[in-house]
Image (cartoon, rainbow, N blue to C red; front, side, top):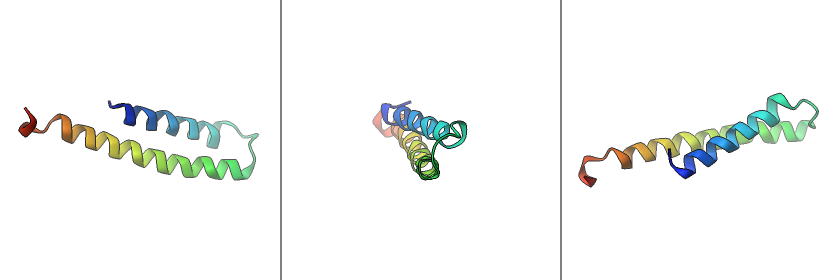
Length: 61
């Protein structure tokens, strides 16, 4: 796992905590956390796909 994928995963987990596990937050922070889940989750998936493409490309060997 690349550093970018790991950082996106950590940010996604932090946003999940803010959105679902911390009910004392205000509604605007919960909405921002849910938006962060979508953004950082998508970036995590993209980083994982790019990492696999570069790592397993037979031309680079």
